[in-house]
Image (cartoon, rainbow, N blue to C red):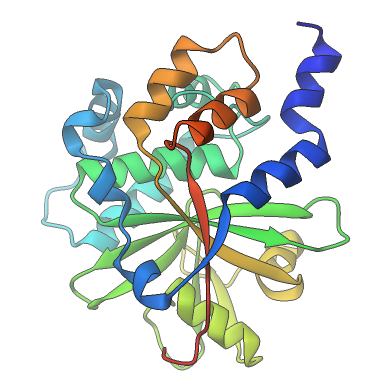
Length: 266
């Protein structure tokens, strides 16, 4: 297949919009709150490589960590060891291998491996996307981030491992959940972006554009069976990723994008 045709099938905006439209639907807050990536993806279905790297991530930790502390540890390791680059669209094991070699990785690739690390560490996790209508080409299109559940705080916490940030309200030192973030942004309440590693406020203009300034619509990504996607992405790797995703959609195994219906009950 020629490079131009491969690009067209994978990156052409019309095909992207069609795929996005097919996968998108509105959902109740109850449905979104009850969804968990771990319900579909069990520890036994995560590849051996993740367990090997996980031992390195936590090799110097001597005390018991809660879910939030574990998630921050994973995110800091990602920040320090994965520089990112072009989008990969590979199986989780191949993606992690390539990212560790410095061969690429965008926010969605990073969000996916973060989810798998959370699974093997017994952290409930979700993957979110945000559709951005910004005119800024550096942030237009969208972004991916995660959300983890912490029993210590009895709530979901929004975390962005690709940008290595947390989001807070000025009146509380506990990170916002995604639904709180959506509501606070709609009500023009102050939202603070802070570095996971240093807890200092982040002033990066592109990050502010993504989360605070752009006209954006977050959605939770559901029905992503890592084992199934890994199998098809490896077996059919001669096809463009968009074609593989279309095949999975047609057989009822594709992911879904669920947009919150209303925030009145938060």
